[in-house]
Length: 471
Image 1 (spheres, one colour):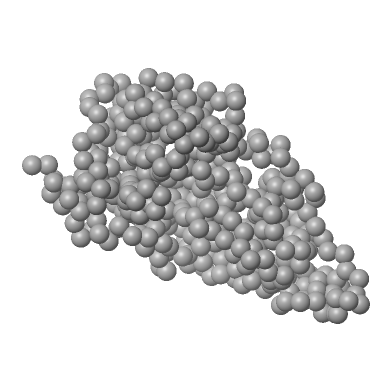
Image 2 (cartoon, one colour; image 1 turned 60 degrees about the vertical axis):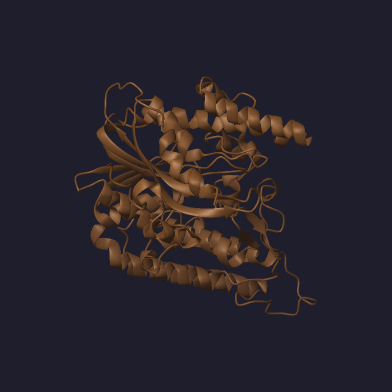
């Protein structure tokens, strides 16, 4: 009898390990993992302990090289660097690319970083005092008698923000601090300080809330910026003192489209892939980093935003363009075509006629077509025997039609010559819209090298998952 996959009992039934993963805690950042990872990360980033698990399962050594083609804010890269493994990340979103690049730069002097940041904080605080603004909350002078012209973002940049995502006073404080940092562009510490500002903008100064899509909560008239920023830089320095011994471990991040890997990377250089691509849903990933992307100058106007969206896998209707052709990649895939037809039939039956709703069936095909392009190009940059882990999740965003993401990606990979090893449960969550359990799972693949005939469908791997979803 085949041995059960990790996290499952014999016959695919959930066991104790499965139960431990079937909750939200599996995705949380553990206290012991906060070093460097907590400098800046997406709210729903996959956790460092998952990276460690697959590094161990894959039997990777210090001679191994790891690729994360959807590296986000660098979870895989940071964890690999901590473990002494060389790594490369690819990320299309400029803010996330910037964050991941800074989070693997451990060579700067932590004491000098703090000294420089204290100088910047003092300069910014002096400027605020001249403006009649206190960083601890409220103006120094009576608002009725003082004249104060608050700094604002340029109109084209401001128009990109979610309405009321940040109030005028915190905006002014952040722009004053940003101006101080930008007056010394040659500083060796500026990039780390900018990343600390990005974190403060989102989690201290803004009115944003996450749940899981980014939205706007109750506006706050004022919020401190300078002091929480300085506190954040000091925490960075503390972390650097912990990890500086590993600063020479090779790590890099490239800003690029993950569907074009064969044009970007040298052939056959990676022993493993550990990643989490976007899921097919209505989550606009550019909104997640919109505030800090605008403040730090990565997005200046709608043209910049459009250019960015064109480099992303089409995972939601807000980044679909008329000229897109990724859907042609899966034109012969019967299950994906059936799924798209089911979404469209349900749209018609429900009388849904908005522009976005009309795109639901197309974006489903574009998503899996884009993932096929990615997996096809990936074959050229991984070594024979390379092992791959893709963290993905089931979705039901399109009119409650269930999309078994892991199953379909595994099937596409199989058709491209990968060996499909398993679909390993990461966690499960209850979908109130459908009344079903949605699985987040890790698609485990192996690249054998050369050309290999597709040996089988991976449908049997989902038998246990299907039982679980009906409970």
